Image 1 (cartoon, one colour):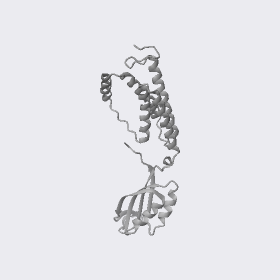
Image 2 (spheres, helix red, strand yellow):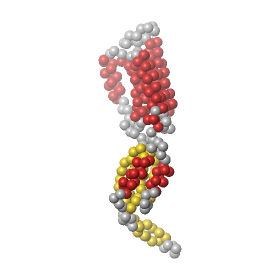
Image 3 (cartoon, helix red, strand yellow):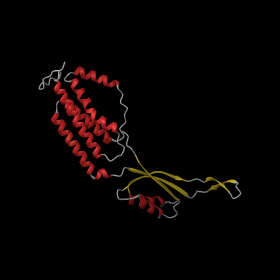
Image 4 (cartoon, helix red, strand yellow):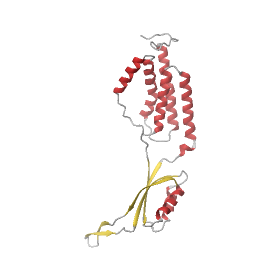
Length: 246
């Protein structure tokens, strides 16, 4: 049975009002963390369910800590019960995991009645997120480009390409180098007759680079510089965001 006295905080039989204040306070702090996440996140891939889970998980953490209290037996029983549940949710962004752990920590701190620790930790965490959002780290280019460029064979070609890349790219990496073979291409002549013509590419080599542009550089400027290379045959460049899976 609940004890209805406000000031009694017996871990084995916590007061009703103490439990109510604990879960409400945990929900308030995790809501502040969720709002901070919403305001400081640049990515457009924001799942509303993730924001709700971040706000609600602190209540669950506070309830678990309150239910365990000072009982070792309850703690072992809770550990066994939670081991039955298999959590398979993948957080692709490490930053999302940090916010989820912050919400859990707020709920745990409230569950053991360490409200000053919960408030201090939440304020410092949110301020840190805001500062990092305004810092140069937040302006880093998250798009990774795939550059495919065909040039004549030569010992100096790679050095010339990478000289151009150093000018425009924050970092780059040679992913693949291929020497091209002849290809067959189907054609239709003026009489409507189909034929096959072999295109020789013996003198061509193909470089595949992974690149990340500098913040002040543009795709147009990089393409113009690469086209200045002698006897360039083809350039293929596309960008996409590369998620980080943990």
